[in-house]
Length: 105
Image 1 (spheres, rainbow, N blue to C red):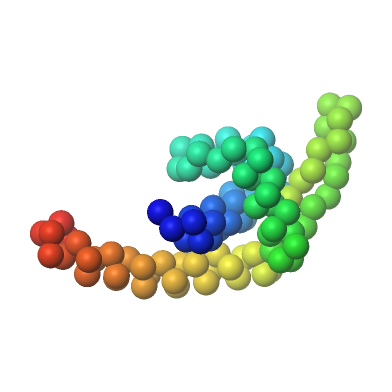
Image 2 (cartoon, rainbow, N blue to C red):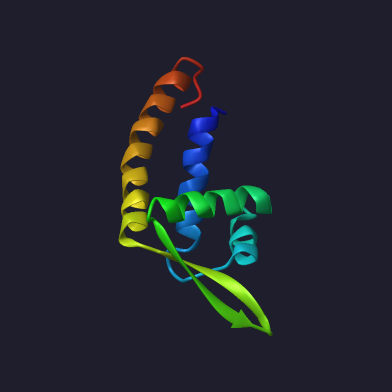
């Protein structure tokens, strides 16, 4: 898969994982596991990129005597999910065209 496409998909997956409630790294990985495998190093790179793009914010809170970073989706992050939904319709259309010749509709 094209690296740029994969990067965009992973970004949207992470945003979707925190769409309904704030979350933290381990839980995001756990929530995404049925859909996509993601290493900690990849996740934290994505989280930093999304924070820099103002698609999420970060707060630190104590949990069991340790500090934990919680990630919160912003309006910009929610907007990116909506953009993705629209873009994905075009990707599905292209996919259907490509596989049409294979008889795999």
